[in-house]
Image (cartoon, rainbow, N blue to C red; front, top):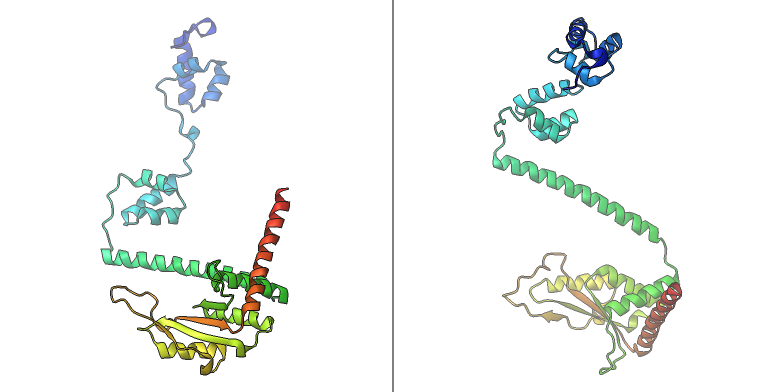
Length: 290
């Protein structure tokens, strides 16, 4: 307790004046200015036990929100719904209504699962739309391909998916295999660019024996626009009954092998072009590091 000294020696007299002013509706600032008491400790002691006048109390901006939150909770609303409705934080909602009884569950587990599944399906649709927008933008950005661009693309495509020589097995043959029809289309366009006539091409379908073999043969023949005479005997992969195949259904058509007859010179051009690309990249990387 601060000790009353000097002009504050008559503590009881000052207290009576301060209390009278407080009860008359004066604020602390007004009492301080009226009695010339600038020591806050002394002023608080003089008014100890005296409540402030109502007009000095600041209204709480969240009083209305608190009352509304309690009303909604009593109506059975969840924290999530109250939070969304009032725009408040979950911590505030919890503080305001935690003394109220928890509302009874109004959904069965099955209904809750259905709602959750619908929400997940909605998110998947949004993701799919975003995916399609990104792919469409990228597709549009590619535009047309120049002959040089198609040439380089084809070299890289072949070196990734085509047959290659080994030091112990020099065959120098050109054979490209893939299950993606668009990859086959691009490869054939590349061969056209290089002046490889279609009469030099031979095709082989490779597919599981348990699939629709005849349907796959018709599909690939129509895709490449070749007569059945240009197709070798279909290669069937034996089915292991212990293996569960995932490549099933109408969309499964196996793979197509595209082989170029008398392709040794073409193979040498492909291999040389590929290593030309590699050397160009190395040179660019060296310049960037220098």
